[in-house]
Length: 267
Image (cartoon, rainbow, N blue to C red; front, side, top):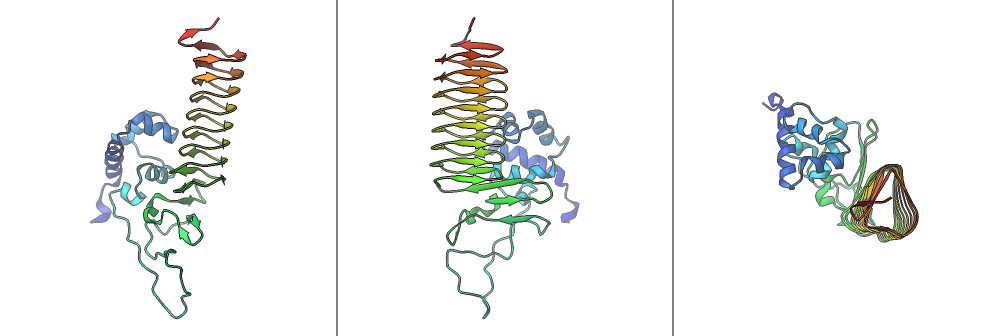
């Protein structure tokens, strides 16, 4: 019977299998979750289970539903039954009675472009998720907008042409102008300024790079400031870090516990 299944063991096996399917190391998965790789190892060995607030995040990373993390099949979408009281519906706007998530105390919504629900074909990946109890937020977009601002976490499967601002973290391809995250971000190049409350990893930064903790990136057009370490290519202006700086060249002044230029410690 369904209730006799060992869902803790199933979850452990599914995390291991899904991680390997994506050729992802334990360290890489742990980094995306903000945890140590030992935590991931314990999950996969059945020594512990992820916190319930991490389940939607794991589902997003693996591109599955929370049900599928436990080896369950998500419910298939159904069309809204027709009635005399049902208004005329734009054919690209889809309704669903049997949704692929539990009927719990969670408010969920979607991002729409006009009347089209973006990414509805993969709705199990939670285009937008708001959990009133756990305050977990994820917003996933599948097209290239000009500017994006949200008070939650932002996941993009494309580029942001202008500014990207998120209250938590950002994952996307390139950002044309400024990138600002309350927590951390991972992306390609940033055209102008890159600012993170915690840390970030990206390609080149066109202007200034600032992180509350540490960051690693390509070249930086102007100044670089970090509360921890800086690892990058060239820095076009000044650099200051409370930790160490590892780079190829610094055009301006530099202050840090240790400065390593081209693999050699600077005097």
